[in-house]
Amino acid sequence: MKKSIKLPSHTGEQPIRVLKHNLSNRFENLHGDFAKEIQEMINSGKLFPGIYYHVSPRAITQKQKPYVDETGKVNIHETFMSFVWINCFSLFVMYEEGVAKPMQKKQGQANIEEVNVALLNITEELFQYGKSLVVAYSPWDKKYLPNPEEFSEEEEFHVLRTNSLYMYAMTFILAHEYAHLELDHFNKKNQTSIEKEIEADNRAIELLLNCRDDENKKTVEYGLLMGFVSMLFLKDNVYGQETHPDTDERIKTYLSILDAPPEEPIWGVATLAIKLWDNQFQLGFSYPNFVDDFKIFFYQMCSQIKKQDL
Image (cartoon, rainbow, N blue to C red; front, top):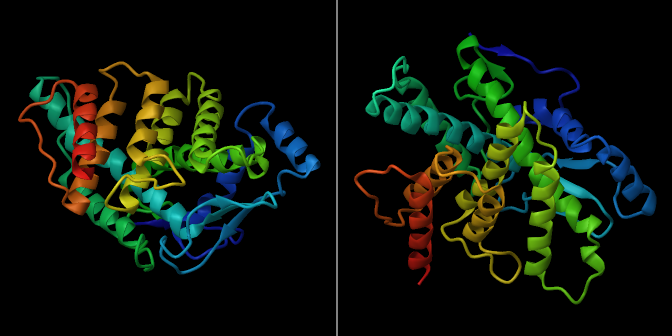
């Protein structure tokens, strides 16, 4: 039986509303001195106080993506926040149940639990719903689909783990918008838009990686990745046009900075995201019969992205 954690202070229309205040707190306390830095930005007039949460029954393509404006207001939208949470949940479950467990069993590892087929199936339905929000808004069926507001004891582990990943995925997105203000991008006329976006990415990555400790290290790193790969599911190509770097290049830049060893599962999660994107838009990528190095496989997949663009 599902139980709700919604409080009167949780305003909004979608279940993601229960994490709104958590997200603000996470962003404002990225590291010990960050709240002070934010206040200095506010005092200087560069940053408008608070985060502006927009609640509207609109698809993401209907101007529901995060942005910062010249007045210093950082804006995020409930539909987009829902989309990111769903991607975090889906990638977490699909990798653990659909990739890691089968590989561990194939390698002969002991005491590996059976694949939770029912969980995989409901996650696939959730993922399909999340992708639908890109082009058409519809309410989140919180009585049926996994969500952060109403969940059972059986769902609690995956929901709470997803909440942690989501916090860092969205904090990266907020930090990216904040970086535009910190780096004074609205007043730098001699830089291209792409140059500014690369700078904002790098500064946001720096802010989040600098807040890692022994307890949150993996959550920060994987949450960052999920913030980046969520952009894949917005459209059938990686082109950033004249305003942004290409999405695959942004993902590769982050992983290059992270410099995780080949055996680190983050390479498998990144590769899974590309495979799900391929499935979403029927791009026709080819796959080997056997994979023993996900880092190599990831870059092989990226090379196919560029081939698709030719």
